[in-house]
Length: 286
Image (cartoon, rainbow, N blue to C red; front, side, top):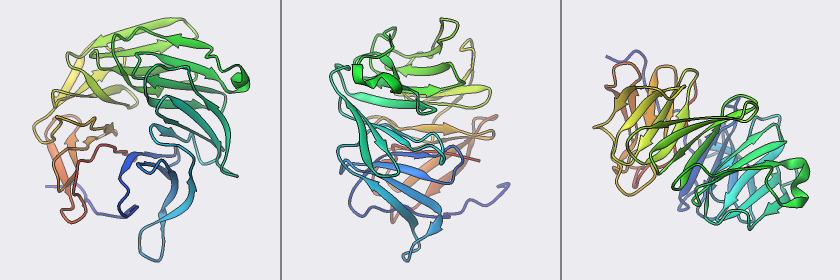
């Protein structure tokens, strides 16, 4: 029996253009999508347009595509990546601040931004690079982390001076820049997606299992599998205080919700009319 009803509150639609990325702002008032048409769109999911869909606030063209982040609704910088290029955009006037190319040897898989000053880029070339936005004219990162033995699939900021990464080499790594400390946890399977909560980390792996790991990376606390499908796509996952939420490659299903404690399926979110392909990007907020 469900504790509360699961309702389809709103819909974001871009007609025939597939979305590659989806994320909320920190205050959950806005969301960003990165489309296959190389455009980032800013939406207000709490307001509806004339078609009863989420209100489109702004579109940012000029080569955006992959990992997209906006720290909060008060910040004005949009950081995104397209191929091997990093793009910083002023969200107010939609003008490109900086475009950085030539630093990564492979496609940039994910980006992170902290207070419009420090940002990170994780790449297929196995590196994570840290940048100082005040010194971008040099086009040189202030630090490069090359501990991964394969593609770095995600980078997630955690605190002012630390971050987590995941890699196809099957490891989650924690970096404390201030203390110069690196922790590493091997989950036993290539990782395609990473998410963090207050006291845990979850890793979606290519073997079809999501692993719940302690933040110190010492122990795997729980596993979630059986209801979602992963074989060809990098299917994303997210976590709240009660649930692990994941996309799936199965057509007609939008997402699977697992109970964080029991590991059992809590609910399956379905919309057979709208879901005609895999759900690869997902975001959950409370």
